[in-house]
Length: 600
Image (cartoon, rainbow, N blue to C red; front, side):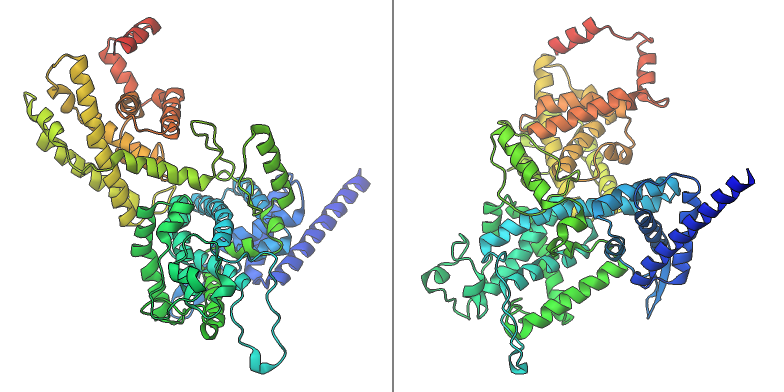
């Protein structure tokens, strides 16, 4: 027995020694500080002695290191303490040869085993969501860039001559491709409320492409950059390939929206309120060089090399101090391996799906990791296979068409309906809407347990659409109820606070869903302190009263109904029990419910 115990003990020591060597090797490659390395080893040892860790030990060590890095802080000159220790997630993963997708999977397990804080878990959720959005956006970036510019794939950048006199070369198309993407991810990183929002991120990308295209069109080597078949080219270029230097850079944002599933109003809003002021700030800080007034000359030979270096340098600093995931990974030759989904597998899977469904899949040889966003297949009326971006923008477009031409106020017909009641509810309804609007915008712009706060402009925009939709649906409900009840007074219905609150919550739910927001059910009922049971009661009324709802919107509301029926309506504090008590605890039969629905 003693011999066996001694053998087991010796084996354990050898294993621990091997793990320590692996950690030391990893830390040396990362130039990790001793304190972080020691904390990572202590945490790893505690988990290792408690759980069976499957797979490569170094992958679990990477998780322990990342958690330890993010807990620490680093002193900075003039800025006090900075979160983290300036070791990026991308470097940890490269040294450990761990892909991003594998990392997210293992990190979730590590968080459970080591009981990491809720703040840390939320950080990981945001990081993964941002990765998912960026993956989808990059799939769109490649084909759009090829549409506007000469295809960078297969074009080797010219080698620099050895002579020192000729170091400054005109920017090559492959350089422009990388510069455009880096400028986009750097800009996106500085707007936290855009980074994890698919619709906003996509329109920010279009703004970036518009800016770079305008600069390319006015630079000296435009013929080597611009695709002559691009349908957004100005007539002057089509004629002889020349553009008068006195001309302003053309805006092709509307054309990009038309050609690539964008929404003009959304794109122009992002450009005017976020992108353009931010680019102007980069010029003022001398991060970008060129014509500060027109935001041009960025690609001119004397400016481009410095601009490219500066944007990459600024983005690297952002990754180390604020971000974690270096989104330039999509540009690398080893991108498939670093992300975790081999390109060959993705192409084969796409081809088999296309053959099985007799559908044409987008011809795009880019990356498509199997993430929640890229895996979502939205089916339209004719089972048309669409991309996540086109699906999201179509939902927003449908929503905007539903409220087109309407105001954020009751129509004349609705006001007449209010006045025809025995007690005019106009003032109370307007006051209630105002209060609900304040509540919504306050919560939408503040950080919550699950999501970071968004900008007030986005809150105002979402509220405006919901308010218009609310008045439209309310009018339709009154028309239907007046017919059904044969002209009976509507005062009782219009004085019910819970009805109005539930209806507004339903409108907001549709708006937030259309924008692919993370603030979907039950977020809105928590904000309005609304019982799930009451929200459930208004969903069918809402669907019946708004014919413009897309199939996806209806499916989403149906899924909310299912959530309420499966669990939320049966909690101990549910309003269902008080409703049953009022009804004398008499539960209606299936026949009674069916009969009521048919007559209603």
